[in-house]
Image 1: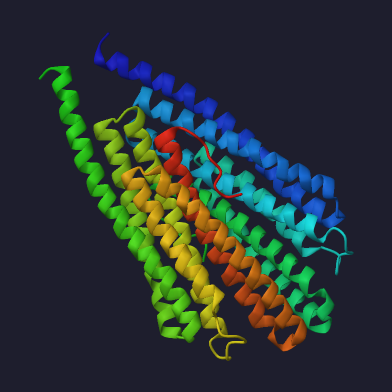
Image 2 (image 1 turned 120 degrees about the vertical axis):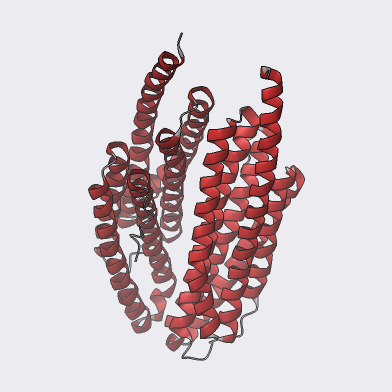
Length: 226
Length: 226
C-alpha cells in the first residue's frame, strides 16, 4: 500500500468514526436538554418524583461523557488525525465537558425542588421557564453549529445569551423586591435566585461551545459573552 | 534509524515537552490561586482597585489556557503519544479548562465587590476567607497530584471539598438569619451568598481535577464529591 493510499483510507475511517461520535454527541445533547427542561418542569409543578428522575439520570450523562471521551482518544490514537481533524476531536472533547456541567446544574436545580417542594411557590414562575426555553434552544443550536461547522449559527447562540442575562437581571430584581416586602419568603427566594443563576451558567456553557465552534472554523477567539 | 530507536527518541522528546507543559500548568495554577485570593481580599477590604486587577487579569489566564491547549495538540500531532501518554495530555487539556473556570468565578466575585463597595459590609467576613484558604490549597494540591500522579494527594482534595461544603452551609444559614432580622441587608446578603457559592464551585473544580488524576493513574472513576 502506498503512503498516499494509506492516508486516504485512514481519512475515510476517521470520517466514519467522527460521524458515529457526532451521533453520540447529539444523544448526549438530547439527554442534557431533557434534563434541563425536566428540572424546571419539576420546580414549576413541585413534582418531587420528576426532580428525582433528573437527579438519577445524571449518572447516565456522566457515563456517556466518559464513553465519548474514550472514543475521542481512540480516534486520536488509531487514526492520528492532523491539523483541523485533530482540532475537531479536541473540540468535541471540550464540548462534552460543557454538556456534563450543564447536566450538573440541572441536578442542582432538581435538588432545590426537593428542598422547597413542601411549601407553596412564592410566585408563579414565568421568567424562569422563559430562560429555560432559551437555554435549551442554545444547547441544541450550539451542537448543531459544531456538527455543521456553522459560524453564523454559533454567533446566534451568543445573542441568545444576552437575552438570558437580561432575564436573569429581571428575576434578580423581582425576587429582591419580594424578599424585602415579606421576609418570610427569603429562604425560598434565595433558592429561586440560585435557580436563575444556574440557568444563566447553563447558557454560558452553551456560549462556550459556540465560541469553540467559531475558533474551530475560523481560528479566531471571539468572546460572545460580553 | 530503526523503529525502536525512533520510538525511544520520540518518547524522550515527549517527556521533555510534557515537562515544559507542567511548568506552564503550574504558572497558570499560581495565577488562578492568586486571582481567587485577591478577589476575596478585595471583597473583605472593599478594595475596588484590587477587584479591578482581578477582572483585568482574567484575559492573561484565558491566553495561558489557550497557549497550553495549542501546545497539547502540538504534542499529540508531533509525538503521537499512545495509551497512558496520550491520556496524560488529554487530562492536562481538561485540567486547564477547570482552572479557567475557577478564574471566571474569581472574576464574578470581583464584580460583586465592585457592586457592593459603596456600602459597609453587613458582617465581618470570617467563614468566606476560611473557604477561600481551603479552596486555594485544594487547587495547589490537585495540580501537584496531577504532576506527581499521586492518588493519595488527589483523594485528600476530596476531603477538603467536604469541609468547603460544610462552611458554605454555615454561611448560607447565617446570611438567611441576617436577612430575616433586617430586610435592609437583603441585597448585599444575596451577593455574599453568591460569593459563597462561587467558592464552593471553585472547590468543585479542584475536586474534578483530583478525580481526573485518580482516573489517569488507576483507571477508576471515583466520585469525590458526595
